[in-house]
Length: 439
Image 1 (cartoon, rainbow, N blue to C red):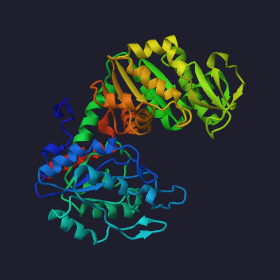
Image 2: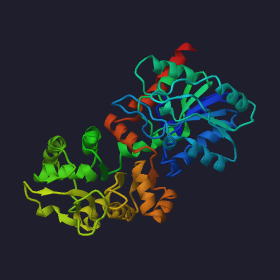
Image 3: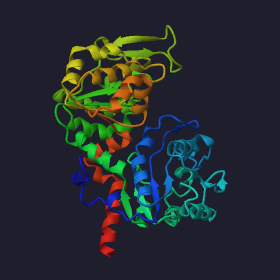
Image 4: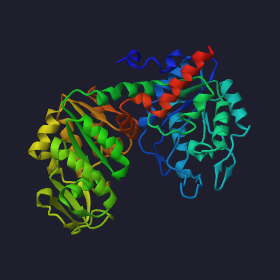
């Protein structure tokens, strides 16, 4: 696939004049948990864009979000080492053999970083003089303006724009409408990076799949997946569910009650059950693992349950995994084995203690040597690597596998039925249109 297959309205990094320019790059390096880089895949995926900018004479300022720092109830922003970009900076320095500087700004204990102060100008001077390899801004979600709804938002956008000459968005996984992904495009010439382009091109396999098309979707809450789930259901030939989404579906279908599944979600899932009674797209995984506790795999407190034994009105503990033998069931094996396109955005169990379902899912999919296999990012990718490291390494070099850096973004694109309605991508297109009119 080439850039010619992209929407011609999308401005590309290939067309940007980067020579002697300071280039502000939004990346999705949200790979830090408890102060440690959990998996560098999303960092490595952006290296091509970063190399291209430097090779063409540009100077780098990078920015990413890490974790969730805003308490939406109190409005307070928590700044802590757990959500610092420092582990990412250290990884990049080891990988690229160059020095990145992270500016230190005053922190309000309740509001986070309120301003980009003028001390950053010293770093930009060093950047232009090639005394450092790059500047890496603090976590964008530490800044008060990043998710603000008032004048603080515009002030932060203007301050960011004042740092650079060009903006590149290479953060496919960051689809939320924040200042660092959208508002910044109102102030600087803006372009899509190479990773962003690659992700958009590979979305075609999901939006226009070769059939039979099988999707595997899981999640911790049903209500957050209703929109994408409805769209996926319309597109697929077969759908396999996992996690709380599957538990909710089972409650709605069989009239049972499972701990951790709300009545509101069960009522919402009844629409899907009614749809499937006619279309029969959902492939039931026949054996689940019930646990009396969320505190781990406690001997004597977990057991297997067969869906064929469910009776209306029965109450169960937590369903924390799908038993691996579910993937040996005739209908399940045939559906996965005959698929031409498989999209996975799922961890089947509550890891690390309940992992067997996810491990068996990945191995069952791998046995299909003809299908295009596309995995959503984040937890799906992390668990694949943790549970089947050998298979993960082999898949990285297999043209039939593709790992998106943002699973939530893929679901959002499916819901919108196109990547070009995602707000950060739309903002790039609007920026190009504005520059054209000015020109």
